[in-house]
Length: 202
Image (cartoon, rainbow, N blue to C red; front, side, top):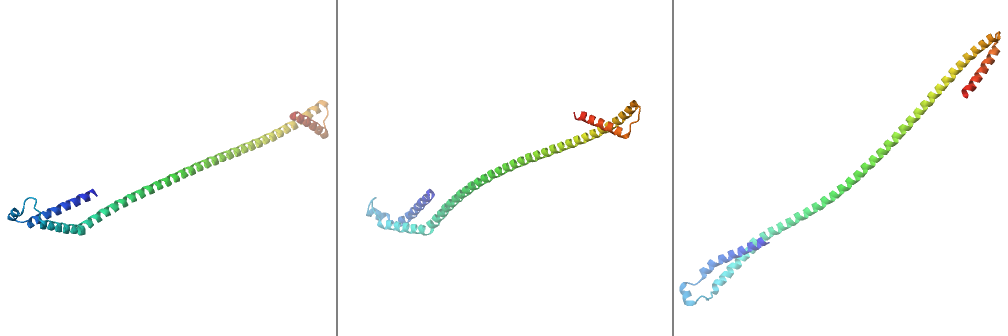
């Protein structure tokens, strides 16, 4: 608006400048001025011309010059306000988008942490299950090996007992000077096996 005021002041000065030549044309001659009066003489005709020209000039300006200028200034002001409002709306939208992004990021971090915790728990459960199964298999293998060893031991002991009993009966028969029959041999073998079994259990 200060520029507009300066522009109007220039137009008024221009109008006054245009009025001066007309006033000079309408002024009386030197003889008339000399005869009519002095420095304070008042020529109403020249002032009427000045007022008429100034009025016409103002009318022309107000009709053809000022409206486009004022319209342009108002349009410029409206555009500036619109741009300012658009910038404010964009800033608000950016802040809203930023807040939504931060919220989504926080939710994503929570979800990622939950997935990590679930994966860790699942891994621990799988590790515990694998360890338990391995322990069970190892125990089963130990039990089976122990059973096989025990069976082999019992079988070997039985064979040794049988051979020992047979040798014992042969030695006893030679000592007694007679041949033991099958019943005597079986009785001695059973007795020896029972005694060896009792010793083994003890």
